[in-house]
Length: 131
Image (tube, rainbow, N blue to C red; front, side, top):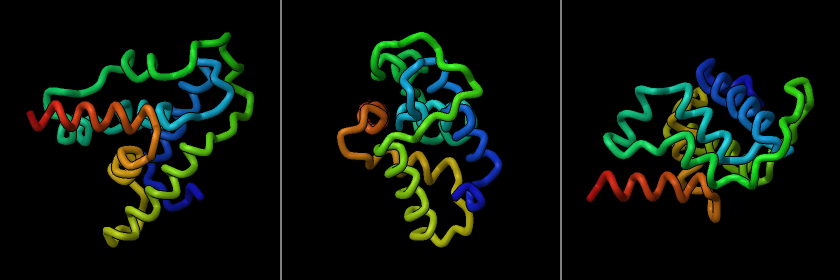
């Protein structure tokens, strides 16, 4: 699956896994993936959000309450919403004629994930930017 991801996108997924481990949620959520994109591709974030970039804390507040951290060596499953967003990112890349999945495709996919707190954050800040 990850062979089509750019190096930057792989690092965003790795960071998402790290955030999931630190928050103790037991799985990688779409919000963790959003944190990974925000962490890894600052240029994309600046272009997408302008002055209304969501904060790390704002996104973490949308996750379930923090549990004791999970060891970073533990394997964490990917939540259904996160997996759906990752599959949608592949569709976005293909639809745009791109050979590789970049952080921009993940961001587009996350924004479309129904009922996802990550999508809510993205919609809120995209709305604030257009005001």
